[in-house]
Image 1 (cartoon, rainbow, N blue to C red):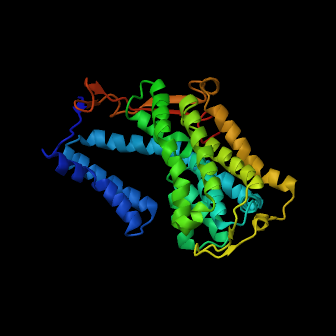
Image 2: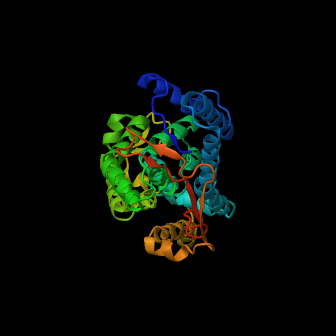
Length: 378
């Protein structure tokens, strides 16, 4: 029997919205106020969702259980698969000492704290957000900033601010892919439509965020001193963000934008220097009035720096290819490297009705996984 979704179980839009928001409050409250571990907070949010679905919305037990299992399977084979492999690559380069070289090569471009903040928190953070998402960029960039002398609290807060520009596309476009899966999964072209629409809105904010980041760190007056560099970083991220999201898809928006922004800013800083250099990582404003003070030597050979960057460049190239439909089609051999599994007890048993859709339609629940074409594998 097909169950129709209920959008106002309490007969009041406000009350129904407040009650249905409880799982989100439980999850975020557990993380932010009670400081419990993420997996425990997630389990608590899941339990709250099940209770509301069963006893408030009136969802049948079989469908609620099936939806929970389907969601867990999707998360493991999509989101967790990406994060697991990215962390594996990160830990491998860390153990080999290459990540330290990469960190030094970024921090060695300039010793102006404002510009280091843009390069690391904004540019490099956006790259990690595009590669893995899930809070990874905040952890990585905060650690790098702390290593350069920023305070732990300031480094964490500034990394969170910087992460607002790329977060809509997340790890390899996962938020857009999930949005597609719950709106029009039967229409593959709609994924590109969603990607394009998001990519037309975000570039404006991507230009603003670097300014917000530096102003938060050191105030308006010292931000004005480096406004050309901040503008270059924002524009060189925003423009590729628009182009990739509109003409390629959601998978590489952040990674390509971040790499272009980082390279563009580094080249710009080779020709432009601020009149005074901020060397105080507290943001209080001790400056050195010498432009040549921005020349920093990290002590690593060119070959070693290239070696440190190589895994991440290869990752970007492979994921660019993985995002092309023709490559994905070649890698997906049904029954060998690609599987589709209709979720029993859930597939086509839930119906969307007005006002969510103009015409009632059943919701497919098909788990799809290409072990080779998956972005996490790439």
